[in-house]
Amino acid sequence: MTPRFAGSKNVDTAMAESGVSQIDDLLGGRTFAPLGSANCDPQAAGLIQDLLIGHGFTNLPGVLGRAHGTFGPQTTDAAREFQSRHQLPPTGTIDLATLRSLIDVHAPRPIACRGYLALVLDVAFTGMVRVMGLTTQFEGAGRFTAFNGNTDKAGLSFGLIQWAQKPGRLHELLAAFQAAQPAVFVEILGGGDAATAAQLLAHTAKPRGGTDNGGATTDPSFDLIRDPWKSRFMEAGRSRPLQRVQVDTALAAFSKSLERLHRFAPQIRSERGVAFMLDVANQHGDGGAESIFSKVQARGASEAELLGAVQQESVARVRAQFGDGPETRATQDRREAFRTTALLSDEPLVVS
Image (cartoon, rainbow, N blue to C red; front, side):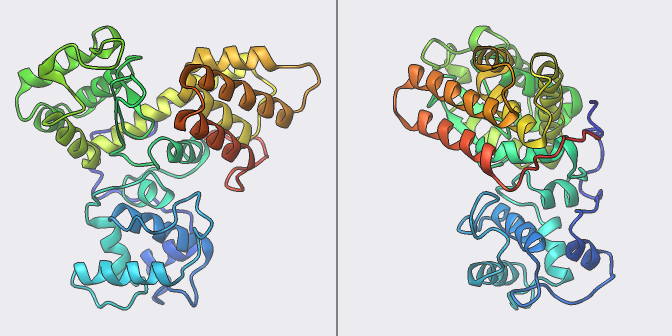
């Protein structure tokens, strides 16, 4: 699949429909009633919560939270606080002016949710985009600014799908930034200096992305988990043009993984199964996902049985590397969530 969006587009003025009728009707002038606890349906409430989370209201339930989609007192309070910050009547309900502000005001911690992708970045939330959006929830809670400073000995891991230095994935993302948005890349990640931006690319192109066996930098000038680099990467995560490049690059990676998945696991067809296996590939690499599946596949096994076996083998491999620590527990939790969440369908995935 070829990504449908170009990084050079003016993302501040583009807007797709969200696919959530109450939200699209309010934006399109087909209704004028503010949305709140008395009338907001779960899909609209969840979209509003996701946008508020991006604006710093991290006490609200995310996509995987039990109260996601319930417009309760916390959501009302967050809406009222957002309105007060932006000189809007503090009603605690979402009228057109509040919704437009949630979309138009640059969020400090935006997440790759339905509302943000469609209404801010003009990305239709269908097919592989849905799969990508959910997968990113397990890679830094879906944040474009997600930042992991070498806790796994892979150097810096950054962004929606945690592009890491060690396997060369961070260089892949930086090269995409430079190709799609050269001026923005120099301004933000080069600190306004083209030579520095070029040196950053050269450093991350080195073996292990410019890190040693423990994930520490091999060049003190490019210690990417510390300032000034940390601040620059955070700014890059808040840049809408570079967010679009993150989405493009993630979708391209997932599409490549999906092509390989179709070859070694053609029996995995549902949206749930594909999302599960793409998440395995994102964590273990495409080769790792194929190795795991090849080890556990059994003739006549159902898709659900295969996913359960892949989960066990995936967790076992992480445990062998990290022991019974947070990395292993997180792997167990994410595999289980993909297998059981109501957010994914058991119907065949349709890739548009």
